[in-house]
Length: 343
Image 1 (cartoon, rainbow, N blue to C red):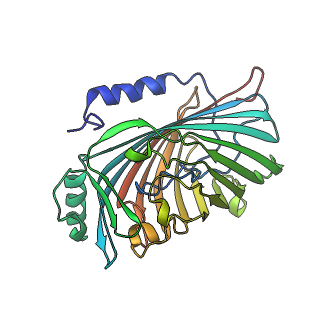
Image 2 (image 1 turned 30 degrees about the horizontal axis):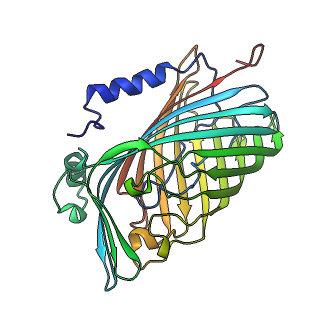
Image 3 (image 1 turned 135 degrees about the horizontal axis):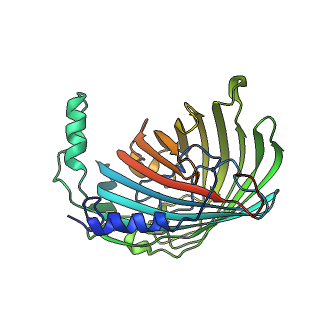
C-alpha cells in the first residue's frame, strides 16, 4: 500500500493540516469544482482547471486546496504503437487568487503530483459488477503501476515506480470586461502561463513552458432564479516542446467547458460539468490521440460562520479513452475578505 493511500493516517493528517492553515474566510462564489484532465500523459501540459467567475474584489484573496484521485485502466495497440496506462494518480493543488483591482485578478496554482499502483481497483470492479458494467479493461493485475508507450519511430516512455513531488506551477490572470452584481452575470478573459518546475521523467510536468488564453461567461440567475447558475469557457492552449513524447506532440490544443449548479439550500448545492479538449498528440491511439471529455457530478456544502466550502465530485470518461476511467475530487475553498469588506 503506497503512502499516498487515503488509508494512510500520515497522508490524511497532512491534508487536514493543510486545510487548517486556511484563515477565516467568507463565501467563495464559484460553485463547481476546478475540473482538470487526469490522463497521466495529458495532465503534464498547462491546461487550466475549469474556472470562470472572478470571486475576489480589490484587495481580497481566494484560497483553494484541491485533492484528486484518478484510477487508470487502459491498454491499446496498433501496428506502429502500443500503450498501457494502469495505476493511480494523485494531484494535490494549492491555489490562490488575489484581486489587484476589481478588473484584474492574479493567481497561482502549485500542484503536487504522484503516481502509484493505488488501492481503488477492487472497489471500482465491485461497483461495475453491481450495476452490470463491464470490467473488460480491468483484466490485468490489481494495484500495479505501469505507464508505457512504445513507438519505434517516435520513441518510447515508461514509468513503473511510484513517487510524489512538485508539478508544473501555473500562473494565471483574469480580466472581467463585463460584470453585473444585480443580475449575477460576468464575462471576461483568462490567460495562463505554465512553468516547467515538475520532473518530466516522473510525469509530473512536460519540461516546457505552455501558454493559454480563454474567454468565459457566467450567470447566477439562469431561468430567472438565483438558485441555478451556469458558466462556460472556451480557449486555446499553446504547448511548448517538452520532454514527454515531443516527436508526436501537437502545437496547440483547443478546450471548451460548460457547468451548471443548483443551490438546493442556503448551505448545500449540487453541480455538473463537462470539459473537453482536442487531441494533445498525433497518434492513432485513442488514449492519447483523440479528443478528451471529462464529466463531473458532485456537490458542495458551505459552513456557517467561516464560509468554508467543501466540495466533492465524481469524474468519469464519456466518449473515448483519452480520459481516466474514474476520478474523485475533494476541494476546500474560501475567500479572505479585506478589512471592512463584504461577508
